[in-house]
Length: 300
Image (cartoon, helix red, strand yellow):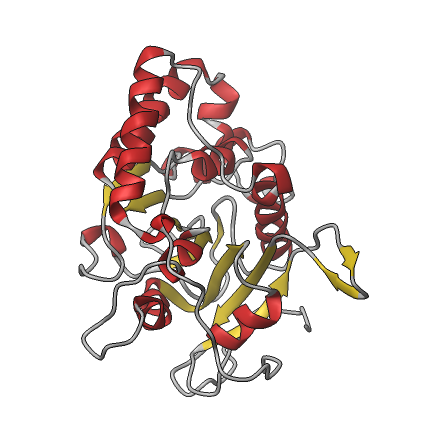
């Protein structure tokens, strides 16, 4: 259970919590990319290597059998008609320029990768960068899931698997987590949902929901159904500490339970130890909080 740190507080609202700010930012980045294809815009938390930290935690989950970079032979369940356990489906929530998904593909994640954002300009930017990158990717990168030299599970994928399970697509959709229902892209949910700064931005919004609460109070209930039972939500934040994130998401009434964390450089100031960014991974358990792990050997 998460450490109790008292009632949750909210940060002061900021323009970073407004849709107008992000629309303007991505229109500007879209214009810049149109002028120069090498200009792909901002990679959030790049100075903290947060993207690399997220990739490390996903790799660790794959090593433990929680996620799958590539298809594997049938074992017990979760199979499609061809008798192959499919690669993990991953959702990037608040995708921005789509860089997180491009990194996943280049690291050999073969499954369907979907990025959503409530800014239309973000979605257009991500699509343009994707098409530009595809033209420059090597055969190994475009077809990396079949080659997949970086994946320890590659030996489990035989020739039949490669032929019947080609690389799944990357795609982007305009979608507002808090106000719209998911489209057909949701299917039966995702094996991993990634949030790199989206909860931060929502927390900085002054908007309130129908109950008069700040809209960040609705985030957990809206994001949980996107995650398959027994699978993962990964949140990276510079506004909240690890203990605060656990207090937001790992509560007695929540289906989300603490699973893992990333290590970042720490600093000491005024006798207190802290870090500027944190990444916390939660597992979605059953509706009553029961543990539904199939292969999980990790003990927090």
